[in-house]
Structure formats: structure tokens, C-alpha cells
Length: 162
Image 1 (cartoon, rainbow, N blue to C red):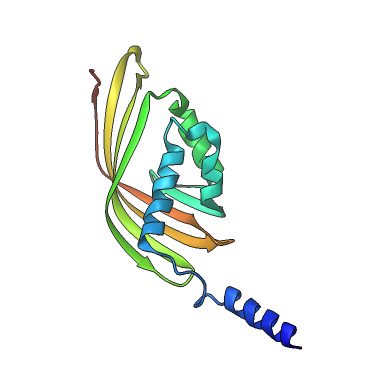
Image 2 (tube, one colour; image 1 turned 135 degrees about the horizontal axis):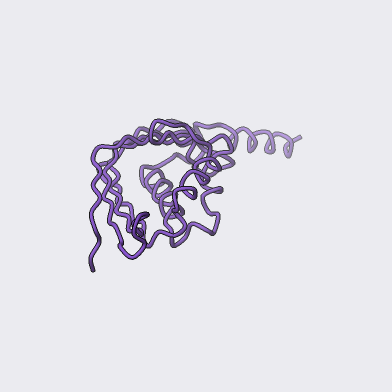
């Protein structure tokens, strides 16, 4: 009887969201940074993105809604796999945390270098600044991205020189 009571108490404690490990701001920022690290062309082919998002993840980018697979198809169709470098710098986070979810908004500054589609001998440097919003949820004990909204603030493209 005592063992059953302890088992029941243990089950209650681990399944109760109030008693479960609290989400921290650091965990939110790390989860978002891991997503962009997985999107970096240096790491892109390792499929790490799939483990960082929920099964029903949606990204809203350039006025379109994509699942993760649709988004990968979209960027790959734009020649992403041939890009020289992709870097993101995330700043100015505003984070709200609930029991099993979190919301973050932040500025994202991306710098990309790739061949000019009209002149493969010329590299271009594209600087983009976005305002982004992410909704994250605990999924099997891991904080994962469920929704990402990205709005362009500024975009410039110029020839790249070393």
C-alpha cells in the first residue's frame, strides 16, 4: 500500500506542470539559437532542425506559411545549398514564459554571401533585418519551436569583396 501511494505521488509530481522544471529565459534563447545554428549552411545537412521543432511546426516567412519540410524545399529551390555563408545575430529579446510554453520576440540580423544568379563569378552580400516572434512548447520534456513569424524590416544586397 505504501509503495502504491509513493508511486501515485511520484506520478502526480512529474506530471503536474506547476511542479515540472520551469522554463528559463536562457532555455528559450538557446532553443531559438539552436534553430538558427541548424539552419546555418555549415550545419544544414545534419537534419538537426527536425529535432528542434514540433511535428506541427509552422514558419510564416515572406507572406507565406510553411511546414518545416516546405520551408526547406523553398530555401533549397532558391539555391540555398550553394550559398557561401549564412549568419544570424539575434538580439533584443522580449520573453514571456508560462508553465509549458514560452513566447519570444527579437531582432534578427542576417548576413548571407552567395553567388549572383546572373553572374556566378560575382559574390553578393545580403544583409537582412527581421522582427521575429516565436512560440515554443515543451514536447516530451524538450523546449521546441511550434511557430515562427518573420517580418522584414530592412534588406540590402551589394557585391561582396574580401
